[in-house]
Length: 234
Length: 234
DNA sequence: CTGAGGCAAAGTGTATACATCGATTGCAGC
DNA sequence: GCTGCAATCGATGTATACACTTTGCCTCAG
Image (tube, rainbow over all chains, first blue to last red; front, top):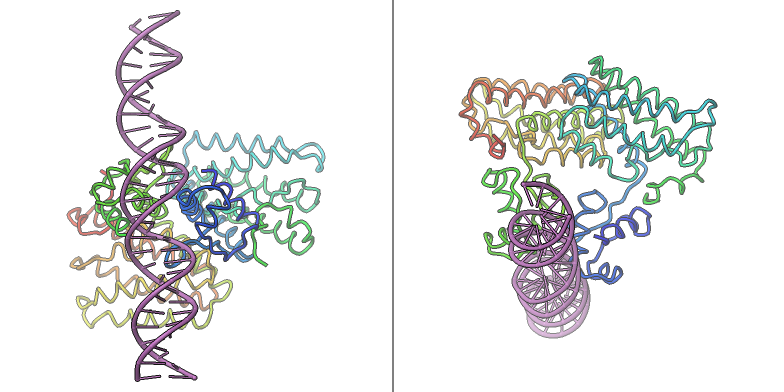
C-alpha cells in the first residue's frame, strides 16, 4: 500500500516524467519491495489515470500538458453542471439542500470585514465539501462516480488553483465571485431552474481556468507553488 | 488474460449477480488458474467499472439498476455533447470532418428503398465508428478518454440498444431519426454552432433511452435479447 | 444477561521462483 | 550485402508458499 503512495508522489511531483516506462523490477528495487505490490500499485494508479497500460504489458507514465489542464477543468464544469441540472430537474433531496446551504453559509463566514481578511484554509476545506455535496445532489451514483474520477487528477480538483497564500489581488477577488456562484447555484437548483444551474456550474469551474491563466500569463513564478502543475510536461 | 474475459462474461451475463463478493481462491479454483491472474483480472474489471474495491481488500460485483442505465445514457449524451461543442467552438480538423462525413454517407447506404430494407449489421458497425470519430473530433485526449470510459459499460455503448433484428416498427423508425441527427450534428459542428451541436448530441443519446423505454413499457420480453441488460438487478 | 476481549479461521498482501512471450541481435546462407 | 531464421536476453505472466490483517464467534467476567 505504501508503494501506491510513494509511486504516486514520484509521478505528481514530476520526479518521474511523462512518457517514462515503468519496469517492475527497477521499481521494486528502488522501493525495496517485491514485484507483486509494485504491480498492484501500478494497476491502481492506472485506475486513477496517472498511468497508461502499454501494449504488450507494462505501464507508462501519462504525459500531461496545459491543454489537458484546460480540458480537465472544462470537463469538471460539464459534469458538475450535469449534476446541478439533474438535481434541479429531478428535484434535490430537501435534507441534502439544507446541507449544502449550510456549507454556503459556513463559507460566508470565511470572509472577514476587509477584503484582505479571508480564512483561506477554512475556505478551501469548505469549498471541497461544497463540491462533494453538489456531486451528490442529483442522487445519481453514476454522476457522482464520474465527477469523482474526473476530479482525481491533481490539477482537476475544485481546490486545485485556490491560492495557498492568496497574496494576489486577482485571486482574492475570485474567491468573492466564486462564493456568489455557490449561492446562486444552490438557489437555481432549489428553484428547479436546470439550465441556469448548469450554466452557473460551468462558469464556476472556469474560475479555476482564470486563475490558471493568471499564473501562466502574468506570473509564471507561481507555477511551482501550484500543487498539481509539477507533473506537467515542457 | 483469459481470466479477464471469462470473469467479465460471468458478470455481464448476470451469472454472478451484483453485490457478490469475489474471493480469489474460489475464483481461482473455478477458473483453474492461480490467484495471481485472478487478482489481475479483478483489478482490470475494477478499471472498467464492473467491480468495486471492498474495504479491507477484495472486490465486489457492482450492482446496476435501470436508474444506472438511464444515467449512463444521459452521461454519454452530455460527454458526446461536450465533444461536439468543443469541436465546433475550437474548430474541427478538416480531415477528421471529411472522415466523419464519409461515415454519415456510408450510413445512408444502409437504408434501402423501403423502410423495411435496412442493413442492420452495417448500420451498427458504422454507428459505432461515427461515435468514435465524434469523440475524436474535439482533438481532446481528455474528452476522448472520458467518453471511452463512460461508454465501456455494456448498456452505455452507442450501439447498446440498436435492435439486433429490428422487427419492431418503432425501432426501425428510430434509425431514420438517428441518422438525421448524425447528419445535422456534423453540419452544426462544421458551421461552428457549438450550442446546437451540443443539443443535438444530447438528444441523439436519448434515442437509446426511447428504445429502452419501449422495451421496458411495451414489450418486456425483449429484455433478454438486449445484450447488457442481463446484469441488471431485480 | 450483556459486553468486551481474545482466539481462530479465512482471505488478502507479499515474496520469490519459474514460465512464457517478444524483441533484438548475430550468424549464416543466398 | 541483404535477408531470414534462430538464439538469447529482458521483461511481464503465472504459480505457490508464507505472512499479516481482519472479522466473527466464543468464552469469561462483571
